[in-house]
Length: 282
Image 1 (cartoon, one colour):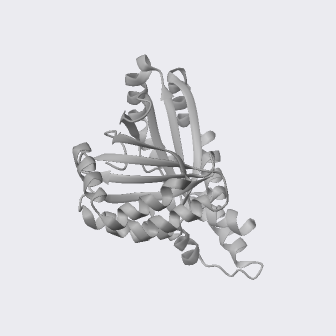
Image 2: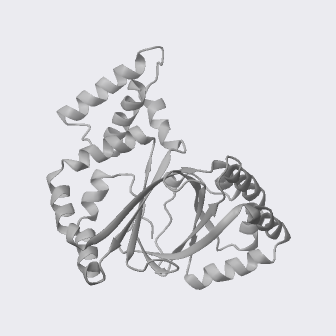
Image 3: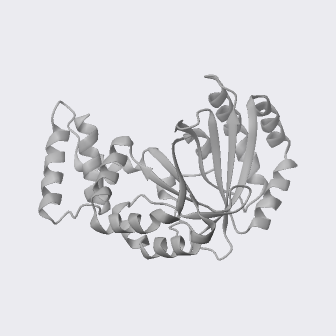
């Protein structure tokens, strides 16, 4: 456990949450490095840095906003975007829903090395005076908050030619949209592994059918509504996402994949999400 905390502290210093040149930054880095060298672990700073290439976990947060408060909420959140990025270096997105779900909802997600790393980042943000002021300002506009933790389905992401989510950083596009596809499966230990196995075989054929398809993330809920699997795709436009879906339906291997997983799926939803002007992913 001490090794995990040390890795997370090093991650905070590396990512800029803690100033490496400050007294506390130097002290924490030194203490973490010492901790990592004890107990036979013998881990170096460079090996700890390599943790950023590991799958880690993804936290997806969805907030329902009062209809009349949405403009003010978005303005406050845009103004606080640099602060959010400083306190949460792993912040990846800020989306609003265009169709397919609750319209007065914003979605933002974050990548962490592990749950210890998540707690360390959030604990620091919780005591930041500016962050406290921001949270106090947006509180009257929020009607509901939800947070879930996803684990990446590495085999599926690799099958689609997708790298780790923490390294996904495309050039911004004016009309770009993100499609969130969510599958709720029947209870049981084999439901999620079975779907992941089928998709790992079918995804290469789906991607080959349409060059506009770009998988961003594929994973399953580890904390939240279990037996839930999600895909997040990036397209140049909403129209392009529909064209990609139609192209995939003409691919025999993809049709077989969907036929194989359908008996395990209770229901399936897709949402069209658009990035805000201050979203890291645009």
